[in-house]
View: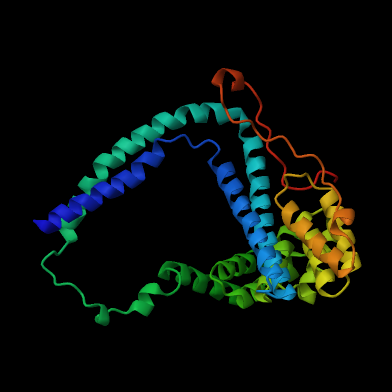
Length: 335
């Protein structure tokens, strides 16, 4: 009897976890998440400055950490750009879908509240074996339970590698394999796969940027020469690409050319909107370069462009109906 009481309580808890989010309005969730992530990264930058001021970390360690935080902030900007494009394409049908969403969410919530307990009971009634004794921890293969991605993912990767062994001139296949390795934290293998994709795909700017970032991550936050050349290739095609501009300047700074790095970061900041996610890390790097040149950071740090207008939060539905919701661009405006 105790088992069934515990099982019923756990099932009810799962239902309570799943159903309430479906009844909430999803509007603005992605923007709120991105804003929260950016605030966390800004706090991390502040904590990094305090640790360096107290002498807990070296200047090189601080620079590497700033580069990693900047990479994550730029990744959020890239996601924001993609969301803006998707929002522009779907603006004609967005209002209709938004009107249908609450009703469909409530129906799905009701369906889950009924089917989840019944389905659980049906499956356990057929497959469950409550009479079995507990499995001692010592007899379990914990390394196998904790280790790595699911078997189906590994099997798919093995299949992809076999295909690439037969057709090694497939840039998309190498790119997918490299991204999978990167998500698994196997950065050296990710860099090798993405390098092959870059060699085959030519000047694919997104692929070049991903390759450069993986090279930096694999090198502990220091920009290796191959990554510097990669970002220079991006800038040759698109001189205003913010991620490439940031890392190209970081490469010069780590190489000892603080003057060139300062000029590059200053230009990037001056051409960025004040609410661009990379602005805080660029300000920090400008201050570092200025200190290296014995300059006053306040005198050499330019002001960014005015912040872009964010979509207003709907405080009055009557006032907000019919208004176009402008999506902020993630990249600089002077292109």
